[in-house]
Picture 1 (tube, rainbow, N blue to C red):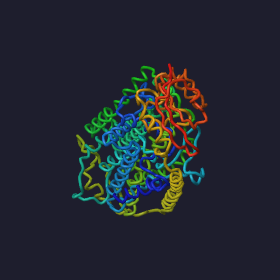
Picture 2 (tube, rainbow, N blue to C red):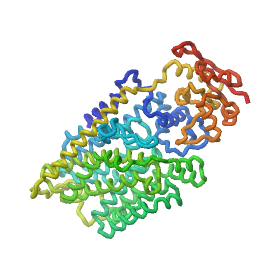
Picture 3 (cartoon, helix red, strand yellow):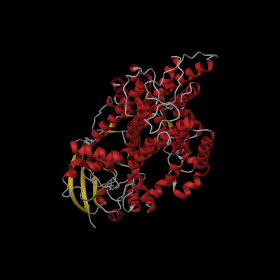
Picture 4 (cartoon, rainbow, N blue to C red):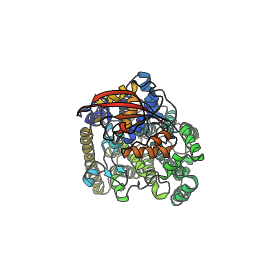
Length: 613
């Protein structure tokens, strides 16, 4: 397990850490517009502002799930640590824990300690972009992309942490419920019901961290549990009801979205899982009810706040629900990009049917239903950034199917025919099938003698390994990219001058600051923490958003409209004298602070003006 964590470090930290001018207090220079916006939340908390506001201006209300960023800010505040260093270290710790958990699952399912070394492998799997698109990712319409887990996890943001938690939770559930190879009575026992419930609570908590990772994990858990219920305790009638409910939602999704809203429509996509989950209530009522209630309670804070905002017709939420355009995944590319986990799941399903293993069948069926449903939500009505759900589904499907595939391959290689279905948490009442305590799950297996040519199986195996090898080329391109891209520094001459100028302001932090086009508002916010006249259109809106939008459009064109600034509530203007925009001739007010610095071509000054009203 430690070796697996070292492998993860080598593949996911070293490419950046060995880049020129790398520093732990430098920000990752990687599709960073949204990342700086998330960082602003942590910056506010580290400076003592825990209010749920738009992070740059510190006005209005933010409905964005922010628990992770609040935690980062509190850690930095308590330890008096640099916020960017905290972002990097905590994010990496989550991902190392994820690699350790996958490693644990590999060992537990296969009873082969050496296989635990490969816990980092799922994070390297790509989407076949290198041979198809000639890059390490597939570009889509608008700003959409398809890339491997490394592309999403590298940001170390809330989504990356959310996916790490989702993977750890799902791995724990699989680890205590799946049959295992070659275990004896002396094998370590775990409090299975408590682990399942705890994992479900952790998934519920993700609603307060990141919406897409939360919903993806819920879809995967719900449909996999439903598949187990249907295959183990159901019949054809139950399967038909489940399919009919799912088809009804897919066909009526547009009407549902129009009636209850796109976000609520996403939840109705779980309808197909209801019959299967209800079948689990009879054998395992305590575990199912406790897991469902625990997950709901953990998810409640953000869900209730969002529902309240929707009920009050919050302008931002209405904009956000309707702003997802051209973000679907093209049909051929989505299938081809998912080739590796799809082949993993196909092999697991085939083995599950062949060896009558309900656990293998349930995992493969559940993921095969959940992934396409949530990743095509633009086609059936919800239309909420489907490519993001595709990316999160890819990460989760690959991480979960890889250890199970290892168990399948070892079981088949040893000629074992799995007799019992999946082991489950200690039930309140004994189910109709014997599940056992895990110590005898492979008991009674008998050698399997092939009665017909294995040509197709061998060809499938060769295809799987060939596609996996090709997909790894995406990671190579990614590693080269991040190494060359490096990090954004916050200790250059201008940055130091900005910090010094803000510190010398007589009422630092007491007013809203507008920076000229040569002073990046991201840098201003990160360096000083002062309320900054900027906002991320897709994250949260400040008070008087239309005025701010007009003000920032003027700023982008190089002009200062002081009347707009006053209406937006701006108190100060920060100007770089070396900037071609020449705002010092446009501002009307009094200079309150100044710092001189060398901009590489001469001497320049960062000045702050308090505007006249």
